[in-house]
Length: 331
Length: 142
Image (cartoon, rainbow over all chains, first blue to last red):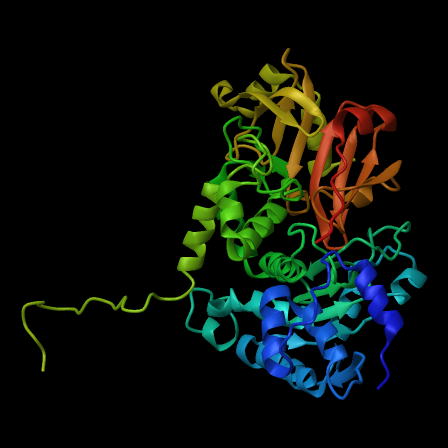
């Protein structure tokens, strides 16, 4: 296939990271080296320059009913493996139509033509990989593993994940398709959706788009899977009077971000996001915020989340004590 | 207007001492030096065993805001109020809007599933509600 020069030039212009020079080695070694050093964009660029002097432009494949942008048959196989693992291991269906339907259902006051404009869009490989990494953090309380966990008595709060082009900005007759929402959780539909606005975002992790994708997914997942812990979280931090109102206590540890300062649910999701994706950021803060201001170090939040997470699955070796006379060995 | 909303409105007109006496809340539970959205400093009075609302007062004891969380569960029915003067984005969530009735001194945060919280304050204008009490949340990006 011919080189898609315009696409490559557009990618290079918009990329925040400079393109590294092509490695001296060729083939698989070069691909692995590039991926370790500079990530997927370098790999894609390399693949586009490899082969019989020809290049393979990315194309959209349909994999298990989902549209995925891939660069090769190998990526098609990888996408299929990720999708099937998410479903089999975590009990979560990769089904973008569910997300589009969830958006329309959750904005009933928005104009009808706006709701009709909500559409699915293709996954990027980096998004599927990030979803896989994000869900892995919650593995003890997902799928079959959940049945052995502390959460076994409650139905799994997330059963599908989607890629949708845009959400709607407000549930109001003034609502429009929005351009800023990176991800959203829909409680009634048990769905979390990733949106196009998040595909290349680095809002919390400059220069680290793939980490950002994982972080956004963790944030949304936490809205669902960690909601049960919100009251305990509120008590532990002392920052919130209730879900929506600050306590005003002068010595209370503030949320890790200004966004987390919106309400206790966002605070919990932001805190869980950092706990799993950048633990030091949660513990040490953003380096500039004073104590009691959003961005301050959050050791209390770290502690609260760590206690919750550690209770999910029984510890290996944590066996119940035998009953009866401990001095008498039973055959 | 009847029921929980009417009661909230009645209580919002009482000063700190009168409210404490009326509901039988120990004055020692008062928390000075706090705030509510755009209003600070305030004194909060709350006893969950007596009433689910938190009552906020100015430093001189005048009533500022009566705030009722989980308002839907406590019987607040926005249908009583009709169309609002304005709908503003709510801190409760991306799909929540605050329906403001400034001339009645009431604001209700609601979404398609119900009511999240209610505020009762001295009747005012929309402009003053926006300037003095309301704080717009950031864009809900996730």
